[in-house]
Image (tube, rainbow, N blue to C red; front, side, top):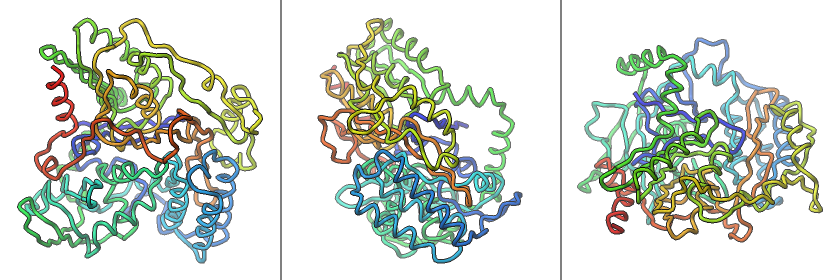
Length: 522
C-alpha cells in the first residue's frame, strides 16, 4: 500500500497531492476516502460527542463573520491584488446577507469558502474546525463513488479515472461523464469552482483540485447533497451514449477496505515516516540511456531534502547523466529554503527569490484568534522594516542574490514536469529555471501564480464560535516584477494535456512526451 501525505508548513505549502498520469494523487484506493482530510464532507455515524448537525445562532455566526472579514481586510496582503476593493466589499456583504437563520458548521463553511475564493489567493483556504475533523476521523461516511479527471479544452471534459464500485462494468476508466443527476457537467464544474481558491484566475488548479482522488466527490456532495444513488449520463469509448444509476460507496461494507485500514493502523510512526520520505522524494537512473528521474512531491521540512539533493546530483555526475527529468507535478510547495537549494543545482546564473516581499502590519486587533501570533509577530519585528510605501519589507530576500552551486552542478538537459498541483515554492523554482536554454518546462500550467503569491507565513485564523479555521497569509511575494500580473501560472514550453484515450489506457502522457523529446534530442 502506498500512502503519500504532504506536511503542512508555514512557508507556502498548499498541501496538494501528487499528480500521476490521471493528474491525481497516488493512493491505495479506496482507503484514501477514509484517511484523507477533505474540505467538503458529509457525515453520518459518529463515536464522538460532536454533532455536525449542531446549529449556531445568527448572533454567533455574525460574531465569527465579523472577525473573519475584519482580519482579512486588516492583514491579508493580497486581498485586493486581483479583486478590486469595491467588488470584494460586495462579496463580503453577500456573505453577511446569508446569515438570516441558524446554520451548522458545514453550511457556514460554504459561505466562507465562497467569499475567500473571490480573493483569488490559493493559500487562503477555509478548513473545518478541529472538532469537526475529529468527528470525521471517527465516522464512516458514504461516498460519491467516481473519481473523475477533469480538464478544459474545446469543451470541459470529465472522464472516469476510477470507480469505487468494483463490480460496475459500465462506468469504467475512460468513460466520459456528460451529466450527473440530469445536471450538465459544465454547469456542475462552474458551480464547484466558485468555492475553490486559486492564485489569480488559474482554472488549471481548480480543475486539478477536483481531479485529485476524492476531490470531485467530496465537493459535489457538499454543494449538491449526498444521495443513496446517482444518475449518470455517459459516453463510451466507441461513442455510444447511455445512462446508468450508481449507488454511493459504503466503506463499512467493504471488507478489503477494512483490512487495509487495519493494516495501516498497525504501522508504526517510524515506519510511516520512512514510507512518506521514500514516496516523497526519490531518484531513479537509467544508466543505458543516461536519464535521471527525480520525483519530488514536496519541499516540506523534515524530509532531509538537502542531503537528498547533494547525494542525487553527485550520482548524476558520477554516472554521466545527460538528461534529468524533475517531476514536480504533485509538489504543493513547502520550505523556500529547500526549493532554493534545488534551484542552485540547476540554475546557470545568480538569482533572487523575490523582487518584493512584505506584510501589511506587524500587529493585529484579532491576534487572540490567530494561531502562533506571538512567534509570527516576533519574526516580523526582527526580520522586516517599514519602507516608504507603508509596508513592512523582508529586505534580505529582496536584496540577496543566490549563486549556482559549483559542486555537482547539473548543466545538461533538464525537463521539469508541471501541472495544476505544482504550487507555491514549486512555482518559485520553476519560474527561476525556465529562461535557461537547457531547461524545458513540460506539461500544464502550474497551479501557483507566476507573478507571485500571498504566503510565506500562513497561520490559521480560528473563529471563536464555530472553530472554523481560515489560512491567513501574512506576506505578499512578487517573484519577478517584470512579468505580467495576469493571474496565470507558469506556462509550459511543451504542452502535454490529458486525453480520454490516455486515461483509458492508464498512460502517463506527460512522461511519454518527455521521453519523446529525449529521443529526438539523442
